[in-house]
Every structure is written in C-alpha cells, then in structure tokens.
Length: 171
Image (tube, rainbow, N blue to C red):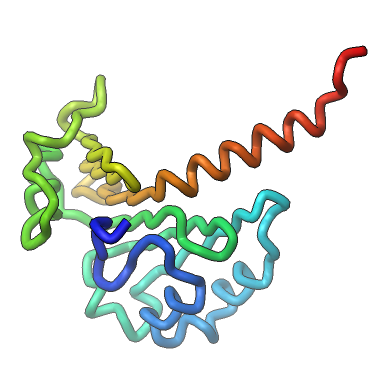
C-alpha cells in the first residue's frame, strides 16, 4: 500500500476526519455533515463526496470537480477524483500527465480496457488498482480512481457471508 499514489494529499486508508482536514470549511457544510451523520451500512460501508470549489482548498484542487470516497470500517477504500477537463484525444495523454513525477509506470505499461481502449486504462498492482478515464464534453468526465484491493476482497467476503446467512439452507 505504501506504493499507492497520493493525489494532492488524498490517499487510501484515510479516515473521514483526515479527508475533511484537507478541505477547510467542509466540516461546517450542511451537505457534508448530513452525509457523515449517516451510519455505515451493515457491511461497514459509507461514502462521502466533496466538491472542492465550495471550500478554502479550491486553489489546491483547481480543475477537480468532485472527490468521492468509499469507506470500509471508517477507512478510505476507494478515492475517485473527477476533473473538469481538459479534453484528451487519447487516455494515454491523461495517464502521462497523471504519472509525471511519480514512480508509476508510463501508459504503455497500463492495461487498456477492451472496447474503450482510447478512453480507459488500468494499472493493477499488488495491493491497489488505478483506473484513469478520459472522456466527456471538454473532458468533464475525466477521473482517476484508486481502489484498495484488500478492502475490495474483504467487502466481497462480507457480502458472500451475508447472502449465505440470508438464504435458507435446503433440508
């Protein structure tokens, strides 16, 4: 997990309080407070969406339209950063920009998504996966999604146990 990228301070494993600390003023926001007041579901999952433009961090997050987090047991298991653009003619341009200054490999080492080869690429790693998508009008659907694979497995296991418990066993 130590190799997972950090995007402007955002990373896997963060708590909601750690996330809010990056967005001064967000703790007082009615929409954010309402979301945080909802308890996690029975499987331990909760989520949070932040629109940086509403808070004092808007300069640090210039070009970011929204950041969405899924939490498992109070820790960020996915971080999805949505961008306002720019438009890219090929996802490789976005990946090149994203990996600049990191230890992540260049676009030719990422896996294209079948049928969306020019728009979506993934980088599967041992503990995490990164997806980069380039699309939409003016790039308004561009995003980078980072997933914690151990948390994904844990959630799948919990869902399977919940289904097994809910299904009556044959006699």
